Length: 87
Image 1: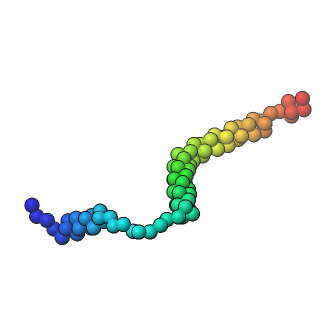
Image 2: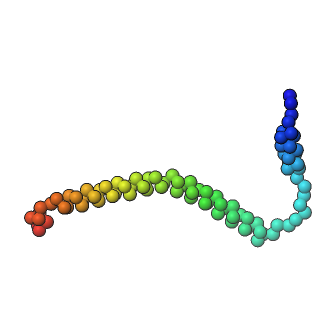
Image 3: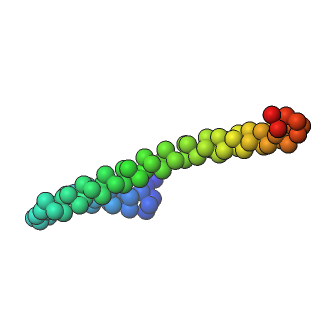
């Protein structure tokens, strides 16, 4: 089996990234709350985007059907005789 340079680079990158070293840093509650808020906002935006992409075509269909219905009603009112309109 022949191993090329790309495979060696990928393996070395994976090995280096999988080694964790202690940071010896303190993350206070203010920073943690900011991170949690950002994560919740990101998840909400993704869910709303998916929801919007799913519902938008249905909204367009509903608008077109309502427009056709309004056009039919307007045409029907135009064709009514004046005698019927007075009553």
